[in-house]
Image (tube, rainbow, N blue to C red; front, side):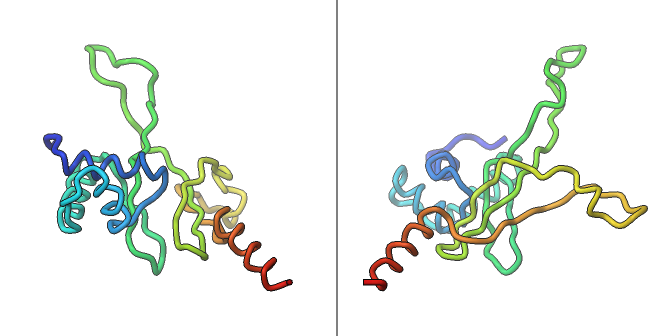
Length: 152
């Protein structure tokens, strides 16, 4: 675990401030509210350290720049192991909504399930990724406003 610095705190705080998946330039924008002099290279350095520590996870969508989110882990056991060991952590997955209007990516906190019924007979599904594409609420509202202006 790396020591907590103002820059690291600013980068990590960007995720809670935004509440969504972020690109490095978006992290920079949020981090500058805490540390105005922070640079993009410092953001990338802090992102690299946070990735190595398992604090954040990389989100990759085809044809898109890398994005990052707070790592989501769920306790596999509700109590400590014998001998005082910490509870084992397991990765929790979720899915994404990619807005084709503004390009932002949002986490979806629902999962359609194991999808074993979609796999061909005899196949075994071990993981899946789902990305929905469309317009976020802000882009839908802007689109409706623009359509209403053109209708008059």
